[in-house]
Structures are given as structure tokens and as C-alpha cells.
Image (cartoon, rainbow, N blue to C red; front, side):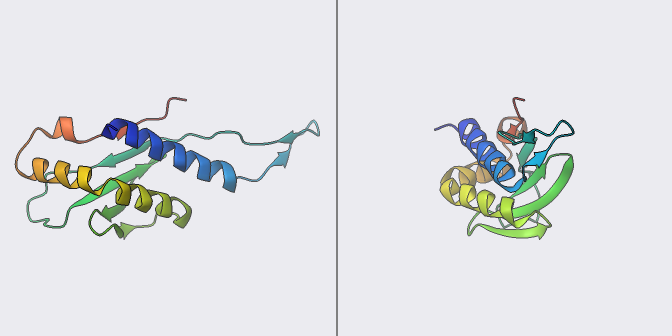
Length: 125
């Protein structure tokens, strides 16, 4: 599966977390509102960072930039304040894609064109 498809899968998993953690509510007309799907912008980024030996990704979520940074191997949060409900999903996704992410990290650090290696996922909503 391509990394772009993998990122769409991750975005959908995060949308499921939003759906399951947003309570239903009654509208002003007395009907119950139930959230069926909520998509926010998700961006996973890598940079060519001299002096950064540990392979890692940076996460933007919603309108927040650089919400957190996660190491790739082993998967773990390095910095940031991402909600635990999202962190678990992102760590699982990183774990499922360690080989691809490490390959991208190596190519980027060796000087490959970062435009091709900085995948970004945007909600289709």
C-alpha cells in the first residue's frame, strides 16, 4: 500500500476517535444530534535536519502546527501535547509503517528532494 493510502487510513482512524469521543447532544428543536464523521487536517512531516540522528516525524492536527513529534523506531512521543486518544492511534500507525518511514527518513537525510518525501494528508471534507 502506498504511503498516501496509509496516511488516509490514519486520518480515518483519527476521525473514528473523534466520532467516538464526541458526545451526542440535543438540538434547539429537541432532536438528538449524533456525530457520524468528523475530519480534520492531519499532516505528518519529516525534515532534513542536520544533527538530528533519531528518525522522527512531526504532527500537525487541525489548526495546530507541530502538535507533537514522534520517534519512528521505537515508536514514541518525543515532544508535544497531543491528546492520548490520538497518540495511541498515531503510535500504532507508525509501528505498522516503520520500514517505509525509516526508508523515507534515510532518503531525506541523504539529500533527496523533500517535496516528494514530505507526505501530507488533507481531509476530503
